[in-house]
Length: 163
View 1 (cartoon, rainbow, N blue to C red):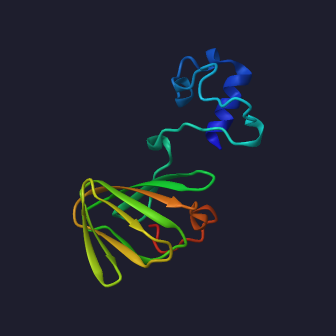
View 2: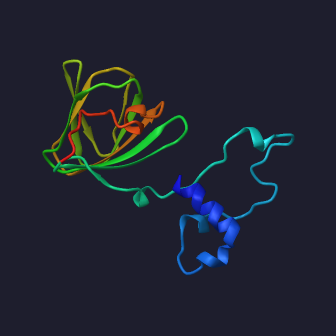
């Protein structure tokens, strides 16, 4: 992962090698004694990683939709930017999905119902429930999936045709 490679490079070459360009790693500093349980073995767990979502690659998912995402070990987080008229076709997946409309408006269709989502609204879509999104305004949509989207990891998700 890019973040781990940069952290390794920073520790091997020294932070001064990267002084000319501020990075997300500059936001990580030692804090001795903080965030540590007594008798806790760090060697049997992962460590947190910090990243900036806007630094993730933007994928054009058709003329009306872009996404930026990353995977944790057990989840996927995605930022969709949809233009008015954009759609995510009817699909389902084995992941629970939490959708948060940051700005704009979307209609979500599922189970013969229409749900109007406006800025600030959140929706939980259980695993394997068919659903589709229609964006009636330019919209920023944040989604969280658990477990991680294996179909995105292995490239088998084909319900949104890239153009």
